[in-house]
Amino acid sequence: MSHDQLLTSGNGKLTLSVPNPEITPKAKRRTFSAEYKLRILDEASACRTPGERGALLRREGLYSSHLTNWRRELREGALAGLKPKKRGHKSDPLAVENAQLKREITRLQAKLERAETIIEVQKKLSQLLGLPTASEPDETNDSPR
Image (cartoon, rainbow, N blue to C red; front, side):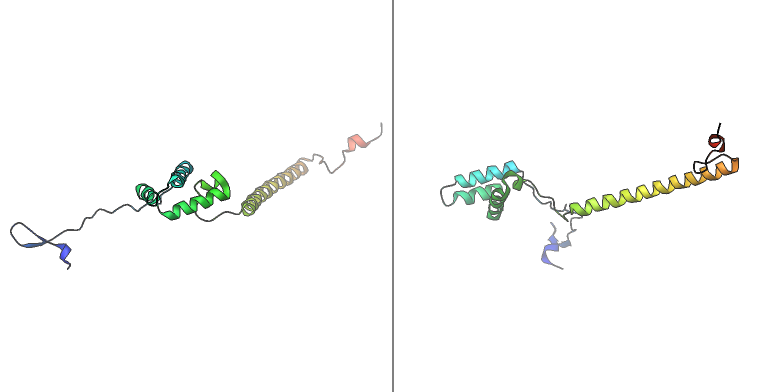
């Protein structure tokens, strides 16, 4: 048992402290808007004395690596480089299009199968009723007048 877990009560006896059952929320990654990044970069470039930039970083709770990364992003793509980037797996546009086309092919094949089934049923019905089909010529129209 550690010393931190023991408390002295008012009567001089040692008692055991109960740990706080509260669960602390998981820290979230900070995100910075493009306007904020530009404002901080402008302020950092306006700093002239040696400790001025450090004071700015401490005041804003930033690291010098933030400035380095933001300057690089600004050089590479102006404001587009300063927008927050999506994290995680980058999807391939060709793979997305390929998956979409495969789904469409599957849907159209099912539709074709339904249409062929309907046509077969119509043929069988016309045979049962003795009606002429489109593939059989109508004898009443073929006879000369």
